[in-house]
Length: 333
Ligand code: ASP
Image 1 (cartoon, rainbow, N blue to C red):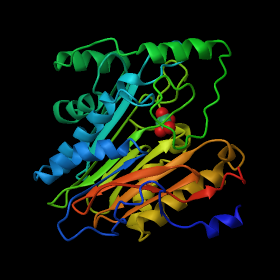
Image 2 (image 1 turned 180 degrees about the vertical axis):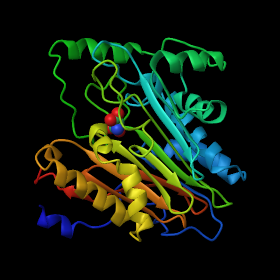
Image 3 (image 1 turned 120 degrees about the vertical axis):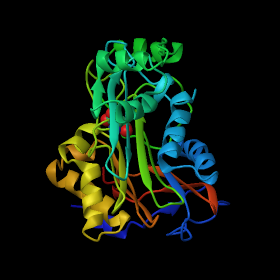
């Protein structure tokens, strides 16, 4: 498809993050590490690292990191400041998984600030994996989560402006942050962690695609699509157009490719190429991004289009931000 992709480098240290230490391929034996999607992953990693550094579990760490992002006042794609659906309703999706296969998820959840924590309660306190919509909200309230109006004035204003055209045209996301009410963005915080005991966990949280149909659920809360973790192999998460991840059981695919011997970077690349093979034309106009970490702590990423950045944090590096290689360069798309 794209001969030039062969010339793309593996992860590049981003300009501006030049003083940060280079990513170590593998942390010191027994070392903990957390990695996250996008530049807001830096802040999420730091919240997660506080847990890991104190000897906490990977599960507690990814929940802490996801909660940080859900509270972020500058993020129009995750949590309380997320953009709403086409009816002006903010609905949140989240999942959490640990390496022994236990997992929980919520989808189309309204009025609850921390969907990742509700997902964890689904995992720990119900016989189920996923609750959606009103049932998820009811469960959250029963569990003591306080319902509150989450839609921010900026997001509501962005929605009103969108209604002037009502054109659903997700854009290829790239690094551009800190604009509450951003009109056409969609991103997800996906975090993967390994703790000092070698246990792995992951979490995914998002408000999904801005201006999505009411009731639309993306990949982030779907175990195997937006997130998958297996202590025997490693973990993977995704961001971008969730429908493509769901069509390809993508996070599971990345983990299974690692099981077959691919490195995290190779596995992410093959999963991305699978998306291209299935829908070559569509793949030119939408973004798909994968981030993976194997059980030794080696990290890899790959995206359809340029601009996917991810954050790495461990004992040797607290705020490293890297750009993944991609199938298409901007001239090709
Ligand atoms: N994957 C998310 C969704 O489809 C959006 C994103 O990460 O860009 O809901």
